[in-house]
Image (cartoon, rainbow, N blue to C red):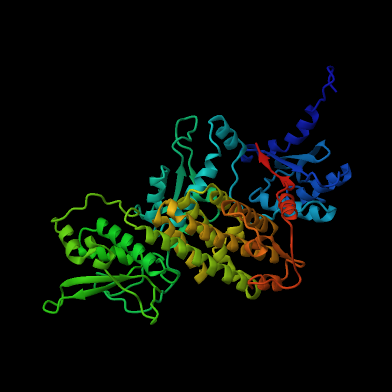
Amino acid sequence: MLADGRRDFRRLETLLSQPLALLADRTHPRPVWHLPLRAHPDDPILSDDQWADIATEIMQRTGLAPRGDSDAVRWIAVRHADDHIHIVATLARVDGGRPNVWNDGYRVRDACRTVEDRYGLRSTAPADRTAARRPKRAEAEKAVREGRTEPARTALRRQVQTAAAGARTEQEFFDRLASAGILIHKRMSRHDPHTATGYAVALPSDRAPSGQPVWYGGGKLAADLTLPKLRRRWSVPGPRRTTGPRIGLCSGPAGPQAADYQPVSGRHLSGRSARAVLRSTVRQAADQARTSDEFFEQLHRVGVLIRQRFSQTHPGQITGYAVSLPEHLGQDGKLIWYSGGRLAADLTWSRLTQRWNGDVRRQRSDLVQLDLIPDERQAIYQDAARAASYATGQIRRYSVINPYAARDACWAAADLLHSAAQATGNVHLRRAADAYDRAARAPFGRIPHPTPAGQGLRTAARILALAGRITPSMNNAVTVLTQSLLTLMVAVTQLHRARGRPPQEAASRMACTHLRRSSASPTTPEETPWLITSISPSSPATIAMSGFPAPETATVVRSRADSSTAQRSDQSRPSSARRHRR
């Protein structure tokens, strides 16, 4: 104790810092390892011996101070209150070694789950890399100082997710970000200066003290937003098979080839929606092309099927064309083709050739979302609802026979939520998309294998991005889409519950809550599938029975008060562990 009554920590500080002198210039840039540990408010009060055992277990699991190792790092644990402690260690071993702290956060999480089971504490989420990167404290405080409603990292992640959901190609992805006012910095390859290997985004208003923008790489926003993983979302996963003829898909002498990007599938599209998508795609290709070869190449890259018509007197001369989407079949099982004149009057072959020859010039080249009639917009929303219903059935089916096959549909559901929120401007849909974020990703950053259900949801997300903002006459279509999304979220919730993933289940349940608020208030159990649960909710039979119009006799309906209480309990703050190095 000092003369004024304060505690004297000089001897303790000297003992902790002594091993740092052995490392000399090999010391860590931040040699102090700091980890606060807090129990959940509902957990019992732990004794000093129990907290000491918890601290020892964490230091053992991280490898900083294994049991029985007298030459390990020096550390202390300080208990400030009944519910939390602080662990402080210096990153230098007594024998002069330098400890490894790479990915120590995952080892800390494993240790926390071990002591939670040992002492019966509130279970926290595993470190499965499904959660997005949370804003740091400095970022949150900066947003408050500057009067922003949310940190820059959160806003950028939402913008990137929305742009990726509506984009069909890599260039369209960056164009959508630029049109939203986002600053973009591409990292180019050292071997090929024309190829990007990564990207970073920034808000124009978010500046560092030096005046430069604060950049966030895709991987710093979420695990599935890196450029390589985004490319896997757009690229074709292997040889692609299509139904019907593929004539004139490549302008070169090599003949037909596979498309460069994953095409928009016409499997779940009606005739009006397919025609609207093809009209927008063809018009965009015509605006960007200067010759007929460039025009067909643009369509080929995005996966549009092309059939050319040649002159009978001059076999090499093109006199017309027709386009279609993969898997867009009629009742006879054959592809449905649309000629240029059937799409729009200015997209006939004669008008296009006049434009490329300079006889006709288009006044604007950005009219991609402005040439849809109300019936086509209505059809797009109906097709999106149909794709959501199809994915719901597939998720319920896979929940019983192969849960891993449902991952792609769960991941693609996030795209549809973001596109629907962007198109409708509904704040509840936006909150549902944000809440669903963790429930969409597969553990440990894995990219699921594409499935028809997932591709249908991605197609719906892309055509919703083409449809643009809604009009008052489309309220019924938006309501139908919202109800379909709600049913889809219920299926995802049941899937995560059956697989024992509480964090993902809580995320999808919260999305259900926001979707319910965005739609009309239901009055019957048949209209409220999110209120129907079984006595044994985690059994595969329960998930299978939930797809039938009438629930089984063992099914019970919880009251709204019980449902709200359960939701509030699931939203309680879990025990947390954060580490800091300074």
